[in-house]
View (cartoon, one colour):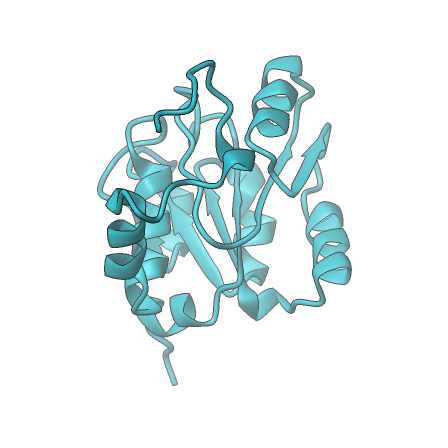
Length: 170
C-alpha cells in the first residue's frame, strides 16, 4: 500500500533541513515544531544564525547525517516516521530513505527528487524551506491558524523570538 505525501506529513513532529542548497540565502522560517540542521561542513555563519533563531538542534561536520537524526530522535522521543527531512543532494539520500517525509527542493539533483515524497515548487534558497513548512502545516490542518496567528496584532511574536534591534511598539 502506497502512503501519500499528505498522509506522511500529518505525522511529522520535527523537520530537518540540509543547509547548502536548501537554506542558502539566509532566509529561515520558524514555525511551531522543533527544527534541526545537520550539515556536512562546519560554518560559523550557520552556527550564529541557528543560535540567533534559537534552533533546537544544530550538528555541523555531519557527513553521515543519520547519526545526528538518531540523536535527535532519542532526545525528542520521536520515531523516524515523525521526522521530515528536506534535502537537495545525494549526501541527503540516506536520511531521506529512512525518514517519514522526504522532501526535495525544486533544484535538487534528479536522484534526490526521484526518491522524495514531495518536491517543493521553489528552489533552495528561494522559498523551498517555506514550501516544506507550509506543506506540512496544511496537511496537519494548521496552516491557516498559523498564518492568522502571525498576522494578529493581539497575538504578537514572543519576545524571545525577537532578535532585531527595534524597540517595543506600544
